[in-house]
Length: 183
Length: 442
Image 1 (tube, chains in turn orange, yellow):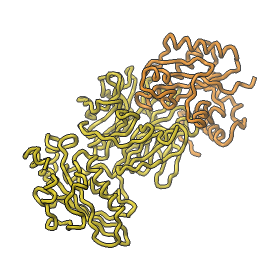
Image 2 (cartoon, chains in turn yellow, cyan):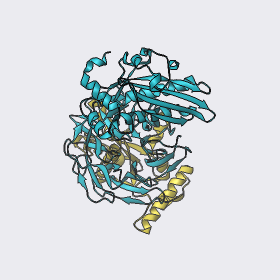
Image 3 (tube, chains in turn green, brown):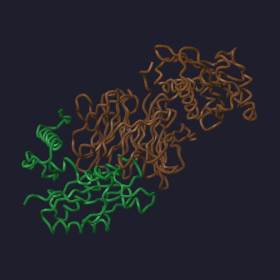
Image 4 (cartoon, chains in turn orange, green):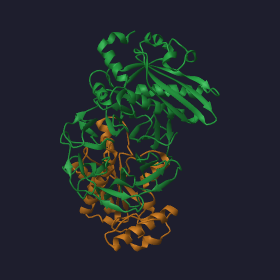
């Protein structure tokens, strides 16, 4: 196992190496405890299971389909935008309510795009959309320990029609429950 | 004699081109008004191959002939007269000037004739193909190629490329492959490889999200992006061994991969804390280096063929536009100013041109411009078109388009006048990557 990263200092290098180890461990077997206890991933809200597979990715790999809906409100974006408009903020606030109602609840924030434009750009745009929602949730008092982000770009569409309605459905940020924290 | 009525001048210059005079002059003619992709195509007959010795292998030889004819059609330079119009049978005459009665070919309107023979021995197949100017009744060159019976398609592609060279002065592009992503076999997008004889080979079976295949400069390895280990990471697939190795081990988005011309490193887009920048990774040491440090999205890196510059797509000015920079990240230059979404730059192998996908009036189209910028030319006008990739000879662009329904891979010439669909069937075919010329076969 080679380390492909060049850290600017040894501390960062150590973090990368540990991340690598976690990846490796997660790849070998599900939750064996170990590095989780170090609190290394507190800021990113990542745990071994989540590193191994995000819920929607697992679901996609099992069923071949993208998942819609869920309890959380869908946050919808304009084309090529990661800006939260009034309607998007309304959805964010509704989600804040749900997260405040149960303090043990932890979520993964998924960024999605419609399929128009570069698929690599869309993967980056999905990451920005997820980040926008994460920052808005944090701004409204949700601890970032409870939030992780992932981008699926244009890869998990809910529909494939060439209509504005379908494109809008795909330009979404979706929150999905992760395993609750222990206490 | 339909084509004879198309005008004496067209006929004469067309022939002049077929004669293979000085390449520079020929190029001027090809790019002018007389022949060229999308213009008057040169009517040619592609005769069956005469069996000259050894065992007969009619099946393989027919495949060879059909593949050659198909390539010539795909080039947009030739119109292949259907074989059922030919007046003489393959075995009836030889493959030299004296042995051909050119009146038999003039009568069906052929300006050119492709005629050849094959011999089978213990070492495989030896194919000799000659090109004839039917009007002058003269041989204009030929090619002897030895190969395995299993690779007759490769022989056909090599022959077609040589014939295109005889006509245009530039070796043709068909001894190559196009990798692409498709969900043709179900829910998952996997990597496939298209050969110009029409064969499509499946290269991955990951059953997850797979993106952005990119050929290495030796056309023996592919880089791609996959979520197979939980998140988007870069991998390398060695085609000979089938072995896959992981290029990136960092969390977050890692996507893209453009191989450096020397094959030693790849460019990629990497996301840290929501922001995506361009990096290089040295493939042997694993060392990565960050080239851009802007808050905007920087993606879709493409190397110039001399390895000195990098084209990429960036939203640093608000909306995604094409930029170039030095390979160390300096010397930044914006190249596109029209429209509010220009991405997916592809640098032509001859270094002269950058193709890209741009959004105009709500639809994506393929454009080209000089690598220094300026003079943007729109090449597609129908459907939604994305993901341009260059042929090894820099004379064609493959791209994905939904103009016929689902997304499929199309081919066009540099003028955009000649377009033809390459893949079909069910599902969406996207993200084509055209290899360099294949080597290695005898």
